[in-house]
Length: 254
Ligand SMILES: NC(=O)c1ccc[n+]([C@@H]2O[C@H](COP(=O)([O-])OP(=O)(O)OC[C@H]3O[C@@H](n4cnc5c(N)ncnc54)[C@H](O)[C@@H]3O)[C@@H](O)[C@H]2O)c1
Image (cartoon, rainbow, N blue to C red; front, side, top):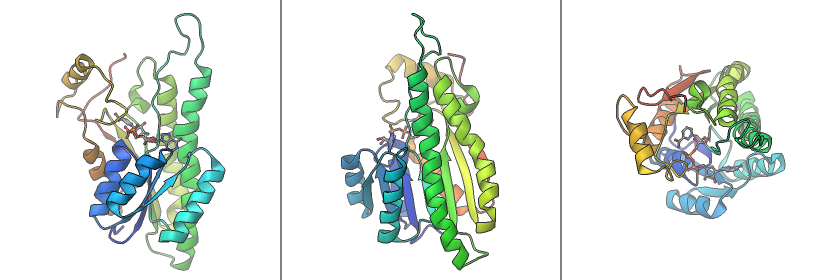
């Protein structure tokens, strides 16, 4: 897929991996729609990149519908969707005092998995409508963000790992369904990256984690995620799978 002049929609693009992807795809010549529940921060990124900002909650179907209609009207059918909106909360299944973390589980699945699914469904429908006009061509790339926790979920990560496992498992059936429209679906499973999600890690924890990463012995940089997203978009043979981006790290049990 040629990035130049294509309309790229990125969720969670006000921060971290999404913002880095917005910047990199902008440099490659794309028009960027910056989607985030934090409209103020999204507007700043959009202004920096000459793109458009939209405030929404990705798990609110009505808001997603309105946003996709508005951004398609403004900048044309999206050719790329990168889903980076997500939350990462930790809790034991049964807490020390016997408390259950059911509400937190539901919220994590809602934002990470269902929000990704809702965004993918609505953007794919636009891509499919465009595909009917020019059959036989590549019409879109959808990249969802899992986490290495989908395979190595740590103690306390039941909700997060389950949400990311769902995202990883979506890649193949979605790629199969959309294949006849020339739309590819991939997932990236990052290890630990330097973003707002990890900035509160105490220095000693960060040093311990870094020492467990074979190479490079540091947290990943958001632009390294963005570079993989760019590679996926431009390489037509990448489809229907999940790529770990982790410096060969495997998360320990806790
Ligand atoms: N940073 C890491 O180490 C790491 C590792 C593995 C996976 N991930 C995943 O990468 C993705 C991006 O994470 P990040 O590190 O850039 O985090 P981040 O906190 O910097 O950015 C996440 C963005 O998503 C937005 N968001 C959250 N819930 C939303 C909702 N319901 N609707 C719309 N926007 C919403 C936030 O406002 C924020 O701008 C997440 O899915 C996260 O789980 C991150």
